[in-house]
Length: 191
Image (cartoon, rainbow, N blue to C red):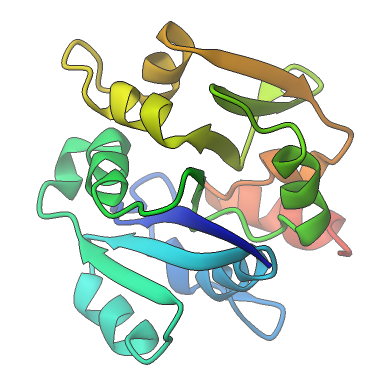
């Protein structure tokens, strides 16, 4: 395990899903359980950013010693506000950023990105589609979240020092935004 923080955002309304996706069943737990477990295989601490239904997440995860729960009171303003909230708590030189609705990342993916770390944001892609987790050094992270002319973390990263890397693992783009995404992932992912 590396001494590295991982920001996981779990604050959104799940409006495209039509129901709260963080607690949808996945394998032996929930989508968010899997996302946290996968990140903890490589990272020393998870910064879980909550918002919508944050009380339920705090109750579920409060007893985990390697998990810092932080509330984003501005979660309705979008994902960028959650990453800004999480970035305030990063203590390590590098950190990963991912979302609570990407339950298929594994230690191998984190490891592959870790060896390519540098003074930039490392953004993985699969067949031209950007994915997660993003690996970023502290100074690049703080520069990105300090931008005031964007509401998109991806745009903030692309205007700063960054490097895109193609990865073979489709898991980096297996996020669950809609009911069809969830059905497709259940039907096609065998882990």
